[in-house]
Length: 396
Image (cartoon, rainbow, N blue to C red):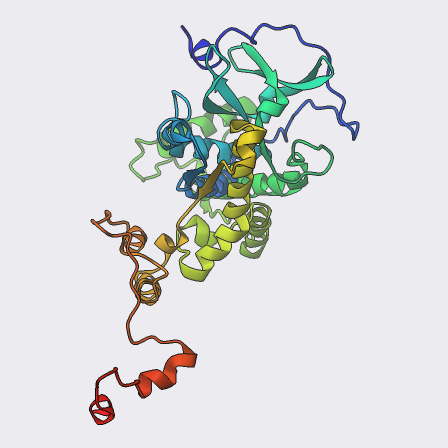
């Protein structure tokens, strides 16, 4: 049994389906992307990997009644080939590289959801079956499967032409072409600067063929790996001079402009790529880049997992991260002490911030006793005498 059959079975893989489903906006749902290879360039891949790597830290929180199976599934393996972190990493990678990622349900023989699998939009087309949109996806092996679009999840960005998927990366094409030229220029400059060139006047060679042979001989004997760094030549050579290479390299300001355009497109910066962001800088990246993705992923998986009745009862899947874990140690200490003393965090909440194991009775909350309501400050300064106690004794 192959991986395809293991995941999707045989039921809907061979169904003959209708033509393309027509969207309200007239968009033809055959998905393609920029053919320049967004994921094949160093800087763009670094941006995508950094985003997906941080997203893989998201943890699932399943709420509602009768959700033990979903909790176990998402905490363990959403499908037979991926852990929870790998699943989110794959979804985030496809989402950031292709601007859309489809999540198809893995079903058992009784049509019960037992897993989730991310699908690249390059492998997808939407067709019509009895007036309803279906998702047909083709794998590299050539095997196909199809399922109702309503049972799938979709996360996307740059929504404009289509109601389902985001735009392609054509807007980035001019910048990628400049980046490619820039990389080639750097490579060519390094290659030229590492080569040795000589210029000389050679006597007693009347034929061009003889001169060509002599040049090859000189290169082989003096510029090869076994030359020892010493050039030897007969007295027929005069005015022998080495040509100093002065390769033209890319202007640093131009390089910075091109790189900044790529980083802006992916909502990233150099500090994020080099893992230098903490505190407010990390919070800004999380809120602007990771949190919108986490919200889409949560809503998509919630809708494809639960029925309408279960949704009405409050069942949900939420992918989130404890941002306090990414603060500096001094910020962690300040937040922990201030929020613990006020009863906002329990002992185990503080342990989570420091990524330490929970302790017994750690869910209790404590408030420092010297805190008092403003309206009761006078009572705190001038306590009322207890019944049967002398007023003079109460004031002592």
